[in-house]
Amino acid sequence: MTAQRPLVVVTDYLAEAGVENSVLGSVADIRMLQTHDEDVVIQHAPEASALLVFHDIKISEKTISKLDRCLGIVRCGVGYDNVDLKAAGKRGIAVCNVPDYGSEEVADHAIMMLLAIARRLIPSVDMIRQGGWNPEVAFGAPRLRGKAVGVIGCGRIGTAMALRLKALGMRVLFYDPFATPGLDKALGIERCFTLEEMLPQTQFVSVHTPLTTHTKHILNEKTLSLLPKGSYVVNTARGPCVSADGLLKAVENGQVAFAALDVLEKEPLEDERLRHHPKIVLTPHSAYYSVEGFTEMRRKGAEEIRRMLDGKSVLNLVNGHCMENPRFKLPANPLD
Image (tube, rainbow, N blue to C red; front, side, top):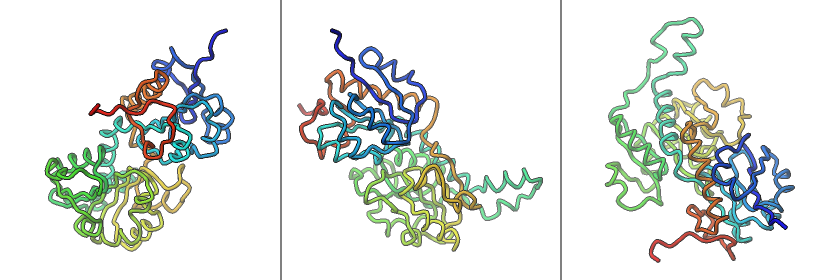
């Protein structure tokens, strides 16, 4: 009797599995669900040897409780706030991410958004398409060189952003309580140890943090009020890092001149106040994407699952702090 092959369940987002098949096809079957509904995933959970998860679905304890043979859940992307880490850890299931596929793309997108709002790109395009030709639509645009910009979160993407901002001749400050000591010296930028220290100095601020209990609404009505009047806000991290209500109040009272958001508290967008606001530029959670980056992300996600199935150490475990009786091989200790 032929042994049953492992089953990898791709929960959401993908309509085809060409990249994943190239990595996993020789050792596992792949099942595409294309769903936003966690109840659909639950139906397939008992059979799954691994889950490959994107950002369109939440994987909670009710799904994880049904993962009887699952070795791990790979969040195919950087953020993993849509997976219950503790519930998985309690059952010995790995949660891994793909942290290093799109740093350049997100930083490029954040720079694009900063330039677009600073240089009044959207109002200029709209005015011309409506038949006008008036350079005064750009009046009020600030010179960037020499201006101070604050980066919240200086990991891979925040660092890539800081280097791009330096190339524009901007004075770069950052706030990240978890950053390695001396990172400021290595990058030639300035470190601040509180938002209260950084924000009053910066006319521009760009968010590059994961979503945690500490970073949810890290920019809110109170912290936005610390910025100089007429500042600019960019968020390409996670939607809930910026309070929509707080941002709208800051824009309405002139504390924030313009904002640019690639991510929102609820996606797809439902808040019509944001959708139609003339001083808020939106993109549809697309900062991560390039042809090359998307393929790299999918390949690396599949490779992490392949390591699990082959009994090799995973590379990007994010729930090791709450792991009990792991079903998979833990990351190798480089000192061993």
